Length: 312
Image (cartoon, rainbow, N blue to C red):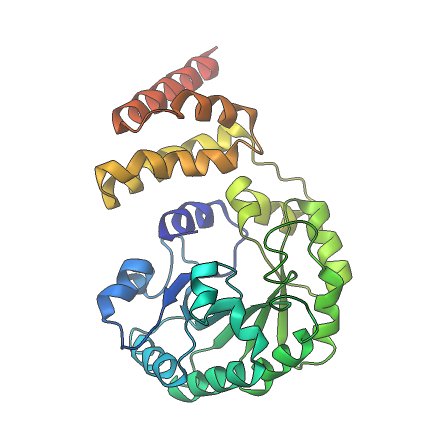
């Protein structure tokens, strides 16, 4: 989920807030251009073009350096700063970042406390964690460390690092965490449809959800979840997705170098084909090409077909 998809998906509606992909902090204070590259919304008062706030997310294990970078980032007036204690990537964990920190709740506490002290009180500090690294035996301990160190909110991805992204997500363990902290807890993990959302809320006890891959696959998912609560029916059919594809491609062409464009477009199609048969057809048609002209031609043909169907 990068700024391109944040822009497109927040246009659909139903999203109250976004968190950026992580910004890696090592041993230096990053220049503003790094934050602006990853989170260009900072140049728009921290909002997507449809007005949804975006919290930049920091990842690192050096207490002082995390605090210094948070203070520097705060100068750009983000709508909040998020801390990553959940990334399962081996290259990140090998350097003591992301989910690897869940084996060291004392260090987690120091990072959160240092960042909270470094950031003005009007800027929320939130954190995202998994249930643990190899197991979930220290999940509550880590959550307490985060809450007592001054975080305003906590997102819990209901799997350990060892679980990766394999189903299921253990939503009931989030309820255990809710029972021992006094800050808002947000449930995350394996939410692909309305039934998943309802079951997650029931088992976790959380009224707020974070969704990621589920919305990349189904751009209308957040709207569907919210509308279902009000007894309304909301379906994002393929026809409503087509304009999003055009807008997505326009942004990709404006912001990415030519050699990266087609792969980025196919990446999203790869998710969409899990939801839409039409996306499967599109993906197979473009699968072996890396020429942006082929995407232009496919989009033009799709628009012509849609126009003819509408005219008929």
